[in-house]
Every structure is written in structure tokens, then in C-alpha cells.
Amino acid sequence: MPTKTPKKRTAEIVPKKSTKRHAAVVKKVAPTTLITGGTGFLGSHLVRQLVQSGAKDIRVMATSIP
Image (cartoon, rainbow, N blue to C red; front, side, top):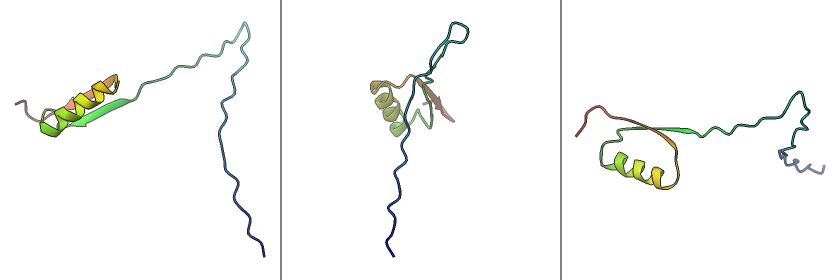
């Protein structure tokens, strides 16, 4: 009995046709990054790397400030 190869599922982005009454609006939302222990050695280096890589919304939590 031959086995069937599963089909690959792919997504395709199709632009929405806009009309005068209803225009298509797409808003990209940047992800928020939460770092716990961000004032410690590893956390501070992680924050620095994220900023250098272009992260926009970074939240840092710390239990104590050095």
C-alpha cells in the first residue's frame, strides 16, 4: 500500500483591495521584550545586545538596584 506524502501548508499574503469607503490598514506591532534581573551582569549584557540589534520596546525588572 503506497503512502501519501503530506502536502506542505503555506500561507500567502494577498493584498486587500481597498475601496473609497473602506481602506485596508495594516499596522505592524513591535513585540515587547521583558527581561527579569536586567540590572545584573547577564541581564545588562542582554539588554545591550537587544538594543544594538534594534529592539524598540524593552521592559526591565529588577528586585534591587545596584
